[in-house]
Amino acid sequence: MAKVTITLDTEDMTLTEDFKNLGQLVTMLKVASNAPSAPYMTKAEASKLIDGYSSTTPIETMIKKGLPVVKVDGMNMLIKRQTLIDWLAEHETTE
Image 1: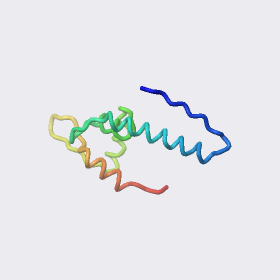
Image 2: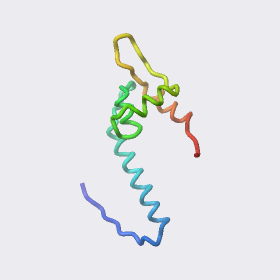
Image 3: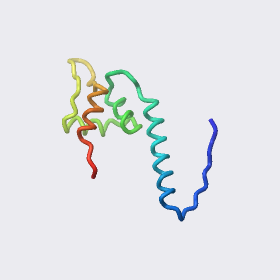
């Protein structure tokens, strides 16, 4: 993989912020491209999908706040990918 280095005039703060945002977008795309594509996910897979980490704390918090899950006797809790995406969209805010 080729490496690109960009030198910016730090006095142009708008351009600097644009490149920071671009870097964050690239990171998010990398995480999304490595995410599992099965329709149902474990809590760890769902956490990795939304923030790139396998810590289940964010997902557990969302479940406590009403994120629907699939729970069958004797099986691990599963989260439907589209349900997670829809639930997050319903909770978007401009704050």
